[in-house]
Length: 275
Image 1 (cartoon, helix red, strand yellow):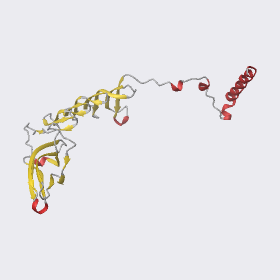
Image 2 (cartoon, helix red, strand yellow; image 1 turned 60 degrees about the vertical axis):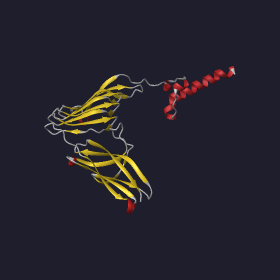
Image 3 (tube, helix red, strand yellow; image 1 turned 90 degrees about the horizontal axis):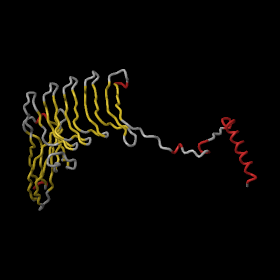
Image 4 (cartoon, one colour; image 1 turned 90 degrees about the vertical axis):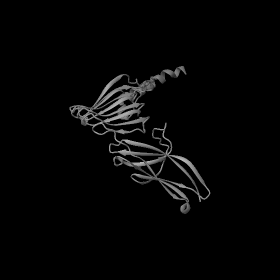
């Protein structure tokens, strides 16, 4: 074997010379890193670290006013997350909104502003979800509404105010009972809203079920049949000899002109026997 080793080394050197000199013409590429046992390709790239402030201009033009200014930091994977204060501006340069992020999630108070600089919305976030008592104001700075949220779900307790600070009265759930036990073996609860300021609300949806903590919207409630934009119904089938004796919890969810949700709750006693 030893007598052939010099010849083998000479052959490798000649082959390398040919590749270097004529590799392009022969379409041959020599990977020196593999030949030398290099593992550079296997080495992980260094992850980015630290914090910085990202600015976004209107029309993505640095000569235009700043639209967004967001505090950022690189996470453990080296990806930039929002972390710290975030500001959005109107083209005039006045503040449009202000929020705080922790690891890319909204946390703490958040404000939105009119173009004149007055506060429009005041909301509080926990783990990126609205939680707590929120407020709305008019362009003059007068309080127009207060509304509670928990973990992103609206709750009972919407309060609306006139421009002189007087609280508006809310409508209530109206229940009309329709007894068709003898002719159709059914009992119907026709539902609507009634009372003062009922015209301020639209798109009413009725549900049967329990609110979370007795106050907040529960997505697991059963949506009832819609009759119109402001009416719904619950039809109870009562076969002959069957007894239906329950206390039902009826929930109404309506929107006002500003998109705020009014949540009302009413317990309805139903005790009937099929005939």
